[in-house]
Image (cartoon, rainbow, N blue to C red):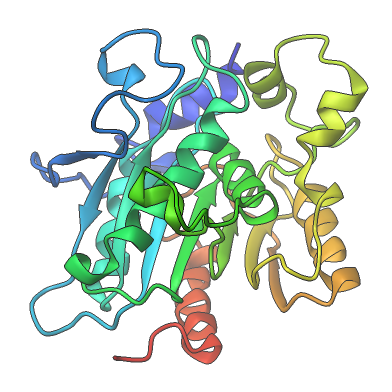
Length: 299
């Protein structure tokens, strides 16, 4: 069951955390795009929670630079903080030319791993398979996640699937490997003592065996083929310990993967894009990192 703290943070995003007013999303968002038009594998019904989908925010005409990103909201794998860690973030990306697709992925109580990971892999493949129509570069498609969405993004970055050239499904003919990853105050390890227990239990179930926990701890699966990664967190995060980011960054360094890590002195878990001092710098730092990585070049 998702911890009370994360649920409270999601609710607080409507009025702002720490007394700071949050931006209220517009009433309308892009129409949902089914990533499995004929029904998702393993779906238990046809309700919204059974239908993984993308909400694609495209840059204004003439401003697109060819980059794209799948945005994975957090919520402890028991809900989705889809406004302040999804739609608001996607609008920000689109404001500087990046096509951003918010992912509504399946989660507990009805769905456990590997269902969420399959949804994330499929989302990346959707963008890549439809790159021409969306005006994006197949070699500049990334993934970003917040909190438990950060775990999902790290999992997608370390457990991507190869293209199957002759697959019947066109989406399976392209790889799910992201070209970059961005992890915001992420859940990473599912091992004690630094895991976020609520996320782990929602994803794997209570009393998961050690082998399953290790298999789903992304820091244990980093290789030299893991994409370049940008991470940020705060020292006083009392929901997801900062050691999660430190562990993944250390694994990236050992594997020789380009990485950038920012640890802020203070700031609440679940901040999203809200401007909290001293944490307001991460969006500009991320934009600079993407630019220096060559992800924002036009054409």
